[in-house]
Image 1 (cartoon, rainbow, N blue to C red):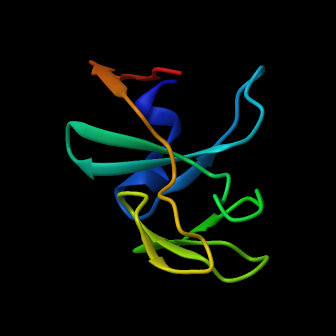
Image 2 (cartoon, rainbow, N blue to C red):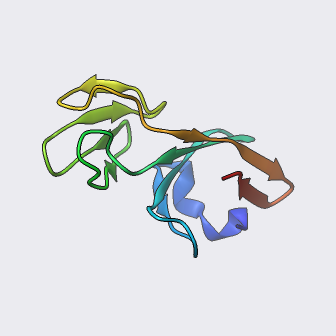
Length: 96
């Protein structure tokens, strides 16, 4: 992915999809050079979480995660999966 495609990352996380991925990922800009990719698949029943500025919220049963993917409110009991992200110049690469 090219960083210039994702200007919205400066202010809030975005949903990312790619061919071959069984579910979307949430891409979060931690600081100018650091990004985090978090599975968008809720660990409760598998619905897709929705990003907001500070949280990832499951619309099915209200599970809430922080931007590190940790559960802050159930019913989910497990954290979301985190994927490594490499940044080289303007390229953002999520390692699956």
